[in-house]
Length: 165
Image (cartoon, rainbow, N blue to C red; front, side):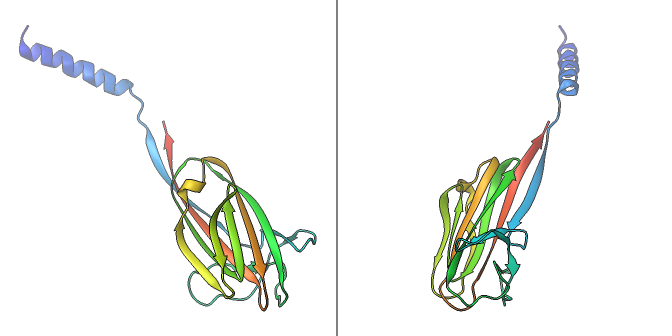
């Protein structure tokens, strides 16, 4: 057979195969879970309440500061549990937290951020990809105010790749 004839048949077969293949697309998905007044807090055995905006935070990070009441000068502690869904495989998970005074943040029951200082303290851009899974995830926060203004805030930035065939 002529080499050009073989090349023609091969090219035709390759074009037919290419036309029958389904191309897939990948999309980047970025979303945030942040402190807000829609968070539900339970403090010192009292009934759960929507979080209240508290003291303004001067300087980075720009995060919403919350507590169970707008102003607090008493020593007590609050907890918060929130569930969120990641629809695809995460490629990056970054956490920002701050608290006055003490905070423990858990993702899926594993400590990912612990602040144990007696003053307003920030923890920025902490990598937490190994603590989340595609699907349903659990965020748990336990925060304690020892004296003076009490408040905390958080942001979880999740970047995922979402493939469609």
